[in-house]
Image (tube, rainbow, N blue to C red; front, top):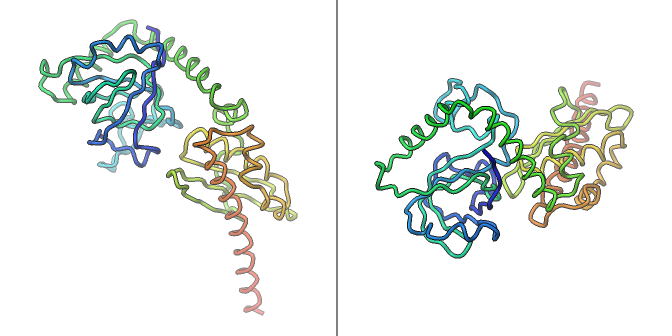
Length: 301
């Protein structure tokens, strides 16, 4: 089995919080790459499509997860959690129309820029009872019964990852990709001297915490629930700030982070601003706490 991205998803959902647990009525667009356009011939004769796509924001999976509808932990394979060992998404969508290499669909619960990573499998839904749950169970049941699926699937996923990385390098610099896959200073500093958590305009959240020693940032970490650009920006912001005096770290700007990363796509430059703003807010939090401690100390005296 060979996996290869054949297109990309354009949806109104820019982050995981906006993405519905089940598809809604919003119209999404599937852009199939030009080289595969001819393969769409006659696809508009079908009412529904089965889409497989790569969950590109999936990370840090846990084998036990909690769902929004239940406080008890469940195995990740018994849920629809996007954070899973193999980050493949699966949706049954209604085909509204085809316009060249673009397909308008309804009922998709995928983020913008998800790559279509397998193939489009079409079937007239009148042959089934219209139940997505039944279709999903039938499909996954056949998948699990395939004897050679495990080794073939692992090979296919590796090939898919290589293909995605090839496409990523057309958009992101090596510095961005490196910090996306292996972020520096990721985590949270316990008993931090300075702390801030900010939600950006796109819905991504950035958190920065640090320790101060001798007037310098001796230890600094970040956390984000955002995309590759947010991860890379948070990583670079902490790298630039680590070891610096607080006054110097306050001057770390969006432009400095972008320059250090060799740039970001135009639609992602706000991620660098989010990292810079969070760093400055964390430093402000440190000074505010110091002032409060000083006032308390004077009152005691």
